[in-house]
Image 1: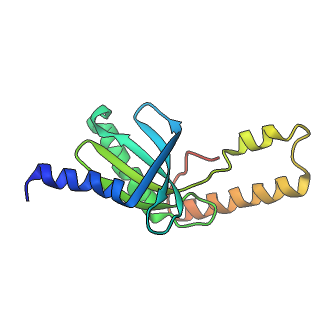
Image 2 (image 1 turned 90 degrees about the vertical axis):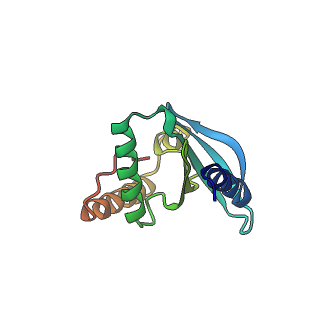
Length: 143
């Protein structure tokens, strides 16, 4: 099978498995789209990383980060379901955390969170960090 055919098949795999929707986030190298798995109807987030914009060191760091994400399996850490790698793009199929980040959530509560709810969230963050540290993973994207 030719290289072009394999790349086309990988791109089609993303479109065959996931119905891509609106963009829910943007970065310098990536966009995040909401998507729905065609067969299960489960909503996910698809992070589409443009590898052509990465230098060699950034590419190595990205691959290391993906390997770490594969290791981390905790209820309070966004889960990586699948990775689809093409020559120009890396598709990360992630658990959808559609509640936004903690800062936005807290900001919506004019009087702040009540103490018991704040304690519950803080405990969940601490449990996730403890797990990550036990796995020798430093999590730099707390939300």
